[in-house]
Length: 425
Image 1 (cartoon, rainbow, N blue to C red):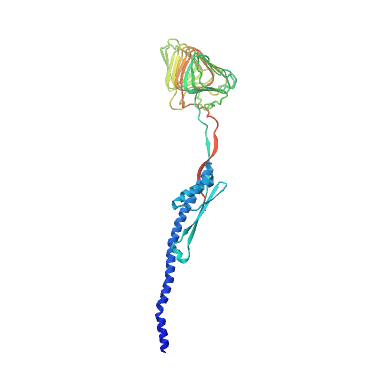
Image 2 (tube, rainbow, N blue to C red):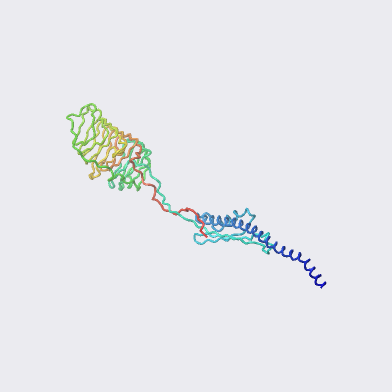
């Protein structure tokens, strides 16, 4: 009995050692769990850095491939290293290129410090990304041409543009376009400068310049501008003919808008014809005068091939187009239904100061003698043009309405890089 009590007492004393063992085992588990949270947090942060690095590498490789500015694999590798360099080196990524797609993979072992009590030395983290470029279609427009001040439409006539004598043209911002396709489409033989931005001839010039004249740039076999006003100009309705005075001999004759018919011949005593603003319709009508014609906000419409204004002697014209309304920008034009080509002459010392569009596509216009033209805004569309004598012109292009020369070359279509996107995992 005493022996049993002795052994029982010994067992009771050893109970403290058992508790110590259980505590040690429990402590290992607790430290492992807590350490795991810390080590896993470090591994998660490392994976985020790794993912950012492979994302940047994939985008850079795809961009280099799209822009052809380097090898996709080497570019992706270098970008990965530069992004991961802050961590003191790092893994070597695997880069693959398949078609337009660049894929980057990388992994790294992260030391596990507190989880080592559970026998876990490292945690492996990995990241992957793929990227590919997207493109958009860009249509490039041709370079814009210059402003065309004079457009001559006859496609087959010889010497559709003929400038001879001591005629001078001061129009450095203007282009002259000749649509004649023949080998003698233009004849330029001037004793004074032809100072234009460009003469564009669909055919060829049979004579250019002389010893004393200076000829501006001339292009043969050139693409000329098309007529943008054909079938677009407004055609007014005809009204009753205005009554013609018995005598047109006042020093200043005042005329008003309306429809004019027949021949109006102004006496030599008429020094000026003053036009009120509005539309003047010529229906088989002519005005013959050596007076000065003046008016602003004026549009003159020729309804047929016989209608015209004949300026003789020292007569001049200073007329500007309306700034608004149906006939905005149009100073003189004709019915587009006219098909017969007719001649139109300006003789003597007539001076012209005009502003606007002169649209007379059926007229062969000739400027003779000592006539001149001074226009700071002008567009002229004629069948042909002849400049003779000592006529002097000073012309600037009219922007509205105006004619733009065709651009240099046609538009092209090309694929350009729009962006580089990361593909979803």
